[in-house]
Length: 416
Length: 132
Image (cartoon, rainbow over all chains, first blue to last red; front, side, top):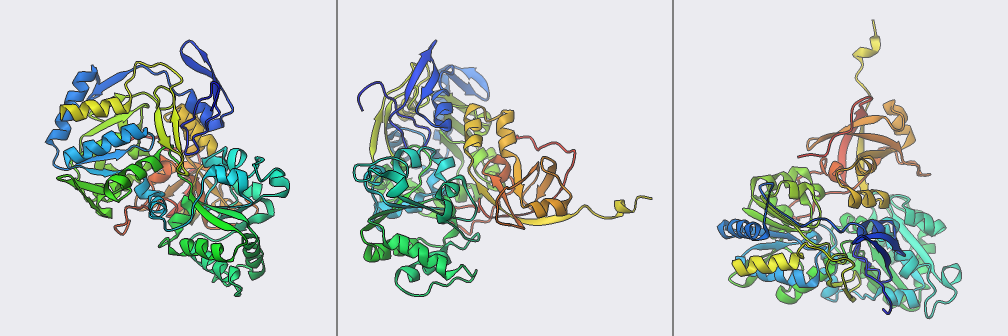
């Protein structure tokens, strides 16, 4: 983009139209961004700090201590990286290989399986720009972008005028929410909100496939067939439809097969084409998945051994912590002590933690070594892969004395 | 004699579904150890009839517990038009994570959005602090 626009790395949308005012080397005002983006863009300008056992040290001493922990570990876990640049992620993959480490990111307990199926071309997908320019039917399923990706509807999917959608949402776009509760997004969808019971998604998908295929749609929870047929007809009438799949839908499914089948059937029966985009939350989770997939054929849950990657859920962060199979943890830009169930993540407290993070977190507070690093997108530049697979590069907004996570990972790799 | 003291406080079994909230997310970015994040995270949204049966008013604290954890959070009315007795909602946070089961059937995916717990009044009790 031309002009002084910055990219917001606050979520998977990577909005590239952000302007800021600076005052005394800090961001004082943020324009165009959402509520989360404004908070995120102002998050920078902390002092550099390196802690070993909670005590300040210099960078070299912290690197040395972290290297010692990793060297002494038989099976270290490298985890996080959803809020790291492509460049840092590739460094971390290299480091994991070198250390014969277990490597995983948050996608193993969120949308990883959907990104994996996407990379394996198991369903048709498209970009957010395609949706902006052509989309006429969008389905938010177990997803609430108004809270998780706040500018999704305004910048891409529903409200904007697109190249082939000059009349916009008033006449040319239909937004549908399928959810177990009336989310903020469901409110926008008005009468196109389809409320289903918790765990009812698979049945609802199968009923919808029946409806689209001209059969009478039935569910054990007695969803009115008339309403289901009404929805099936909207979907069938789509020229450019997209299902935005959220965690609410994924967690409710035993397998991805039904939703993949629905997209297939819609591509046969609908007027035009149908796509699926996973609602990836962290700004570069998809980047991590793509880089690891290119390297190993898997998007997460790997254990390296002599350069080869073994894969399985036993190498997921959750199962590795449950089984206590890892004996040190290098955690980059993530706070598992906050984001994982306490019943599982308590085991992390039994092993030495190295935390590389711009923020002080529950995890960094318990770390044997903590590196306070530059906030990517605000204090350091790089590139990332947007939730829809588009590459986005960004420059820093501020100068900082804090090293990037990429720099720390490079130094660790050199020392090891 | 206060006959009521022999009766246990009403207890409600709920299925808790977690969700994301933009205000809570913003509060986390600004200060994950701050009051605003705590106030927007440590809460449970209940159906009005469930609140009534628990003898709890909006803003009162309640104990939410199961075999994995025991927390005190604020009770709120969900505000949804459709009745959802027995189903409660909590923002996804370290508080809800104190109640998530460790049973994953080897999948690596905890049941973040499918938590079974009981709720009782904890009127006057303080919201659980965020610490390890």
